Length: 174
Image (cartoon, rainbow, N blue to C red):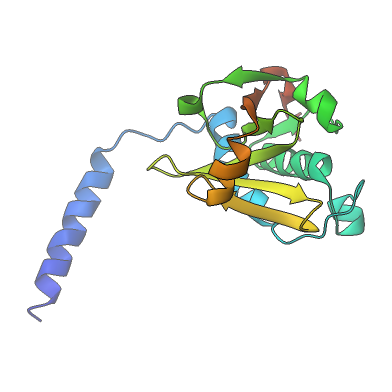
């Protein structure tokens, strides 16, 4: 019984803290970013095939991977993602952002237009990336603490990019 008292006391403090917090902003744009990680994680390990469409073929390339993640997160947030675009068209519908402004769903792009999606940024600032790797033959992930990030991605870094606002539209009411 002695152990229960501290547990109940700490539970009480947690409940009190939760009651005094401000409401969570749940705009569709914020929800879209919040749904990126769980949507992206479904594709880890999926085979790479150029032109592969995840729902139809169970495989993907980078363009279809990003489209599938954006479409899934948008749908869950009550939005519609504009359309499938090959990588060069997708990159033409983005704008550059600063490294300290990166959020879930942003892209890191290399000087050869190879891109990975930032699918999660943790509170420490560590970024988690996902992309369809032709070399590895599957959808793979890495984080900003990984040597590959420093030795390859930052060596060929072009910039961080975010999809333009007009890429997401409100879903029609049902």
